[in-house]
Image: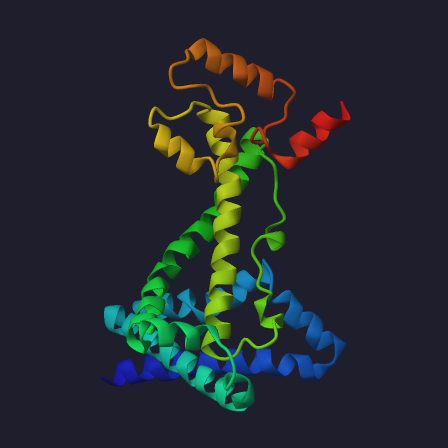
Amino acid sequence: MNSFLLVFAATFSLEVAIILMLALLPRLGGLGKDLLESFTKAPWLDVILSVMLWVPWLISGLIDGASGIFAALVAQITALQLWCALHELAHRQTTAGCGIARFHNQRLGWWRNNLALWVTSVVVPVFFLIRFAEIFVYPWLTWLLGFPKYNHSEWVNVSRQKFQGLIGKDLIWCLYCDWMTGVYSLGAEMLRNVESFWCPIRFYDGKKCENCKIDFPDIEGGWIAAEGSMNDVEQVLVQKYSDREQSWFGHPERQAKSGKQ
């Protein structure tokens, strides 16, 4: 029990310290605002989220196993709930009006809406794994194959804190979605290069083609039909990659070069 309380206290203190730091930075003038802005986009957004989320899980797990991880999670949830309550109290005039959580609570019921929100939090480790692959795995493909590089900060960032009226739980969950959407979109962009480079063949399942063409536009923009031949596949590879352009067929840079020619 002592180790549980120790991990809880240490993690809770860490969360509160980071929250206070982020809250105080704007009061330090231009330098503070610049620092705060740097924490809203990769790579510093990755650092701050790691320190707030998975680093405590890792350290607590090494210290006290599953019990330590559970203690860290309880501390993080407690700090989050406390911040939401205080933020809503400080902006009670705003919370008296419209709100996303308020609408869904009334429509679906408080417990269903809030339980569903917490269910989505289970995938946080999955998105960290995707982010890990984007940072540490994909660069090998740019080095080995010449795949296009990406400015991660243009994808992985948060900005909804600037939207007027987002308070407490609404703000936290919107920032969560803000981060997830960027991580997912960058991962999908990288995977487009992988698919079109190694497997430019349409699926036999027409419904799958229809569903996947949203994330993989090359399905309709150059992949070989399922009833085609390997000769057709080789021909499209020759056509698309002989000029040393290694991006997916509809990549903006490829399209820009094509337009200049």
